[in-house]
Image 1 (cartoon, rainbow, N blue to C red):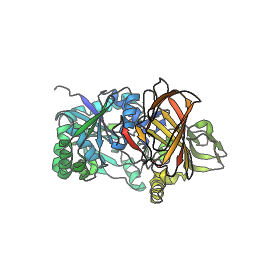
Image 2 (image 1 turned 90 degrees about the vertical axis):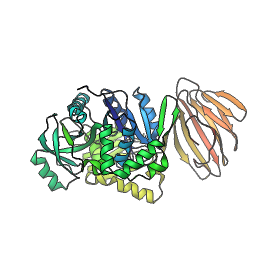
Image 3 (image 1 turned 90 degrees about the horizontal axis):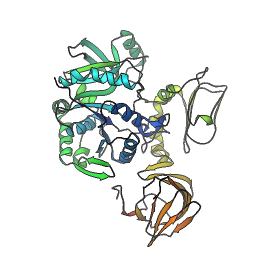
Image 4 (image 1 turned 120 degrees about the horizontal axis):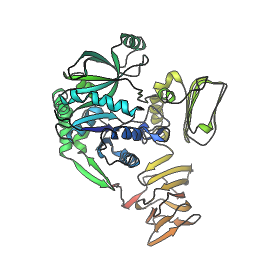
Length: 475
């Protein structure tokens, strides 16, 4: 039998609620540097590139430039399929299968898992190849190390001739007593949410068990459009058809019904990094169980036990006489939680959203396709921002109805379009953009550009932008 090449598909969706305040809707955890200076998506790309450097990413439209930026960091050029709305894993996987040839083997992986042993992961995938090429949907299960109530479980059945094992049943996240029984039974695995199968096998299963999801995704793909930004091509399924799709996980839509399902165990280290407790486990503990991450020079434990500090700001974070706490500090929000309530952080986000707090959805520092901005200070009629522009990048040609702006170059070189004038500014030089003036900021240099922008006016919202030219497909 000729071995088919495996195409990795990274599912990049996420709501950014479980690791708030470091992760937010505008910057979910897979894009946040959590492991050293690398994001989980970057680590996933590096891991999967060992299997095949031609990678497909399925992501939300609002995160397209974060995905593109991470692909550049990994020195990869993957196809990026943009979901018009969040419809869970069944629809996301269907889009990827529709983009492939029927016999292609697709390896579906979440973007936000941490699997440090790349070679063990590649060996696990290879162990599932024969079953997948033979027509099975292969799922991968992690050997449990404790009775977790945060993961689903897979019961292994008898050995198959293709080297995998039969799946007896799937069990949703159990209560603690049941989880203990499953661990002691010895034949249960954590459900890792990783799948390997032929594209046509997945589509046939969806057509049989979830025909409405299949029909919506097929119609959306038939109405496909695309656009290119730089070296990246974004594939856009028809929004009307896709938005009509039912939201359901692949587990409920297909896996619990399909007959030919196999499982391959994984014995290496794995985490879905699904809570602050899981993040804390990635850090090294001292003799009293204390851990630190982020800017660790600013994290201080005094007379503490089992306390985790993530210091993401530039101020000292001090825990004194605490135990069993999670302390997550960011420039605009602070979370202090008992370790027993780590799974309830999303309730905090829901509460803040109900209060219309912007901190529930986005950071003070906001990523943009050209770089970033950080709102340093905001008042009734003024706002101060730090703005960073990547080398060779530029903002849109734009104007504002309600505000004027003062720009001061802190570092780098700025090319400024100010009405009919184009000027070059360097460190310590400045310019004034009057209200209603057409303008653009660009970085023609080889190093990052940073400026201080002082806005003044009657309205300072981000929606007071009229764009005339834009390199990033925005209106």
